[in-house]
Image 1 (cartoon, rainbow, N blue to C red):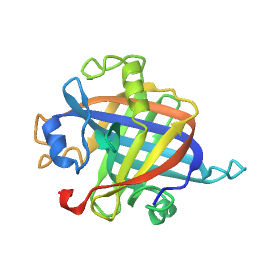
Image 2: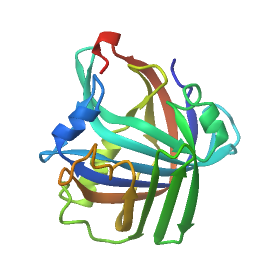
Image 3: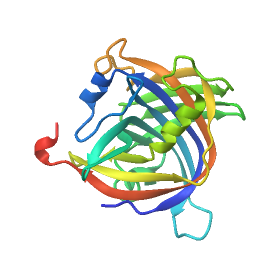
Length: 246
């Protein structure tokens, strides 16, 4: 089922990223996805996004719902009707909103788990903590806007990283049906990022050594976006035959 078009404001978005051994990521990804490689590394991370005024695209008034949300994601490639596509695969979504959770798979893509968020924010510093109510995910990302860019990143510059994530506008999320993924496209009316110099980067998911062995994953970079007018447009579901599902 295609998700209806919705619009709103990305009040704050953090893209906190790791570079990861591609063989490790390949073992995690379901078909048809394979890791998108940047200078020999796969890219994974966390999107922490506060949404405001979310409403149907044709709704004429700038009012709607707001929520704090987290998505664990990987940059991926896949073949669709013989055409190579690039975007992100989202194995887990968490939200502060009971409505987002209840509407997951209909108005919002994929399964949304309920979670509690603690946010502290100033003009140049932001801290977001999340604990999922099912106990399966917790994280803390904090940092300060800084004009430099990490030398250890696989991206050569902030501009290169910004372009990479801007181009990864297609996202497919896990659903309750194995082998079926809800698709959505992010269309931003304006796009601007700042480098976020990280003070704290903790993730129970990405720090699980049974999934990501020691030495296979390293912090890469973090980007901060604010006050972005945007629309979400549903895509056709992406499905794999049952025989192809791991």
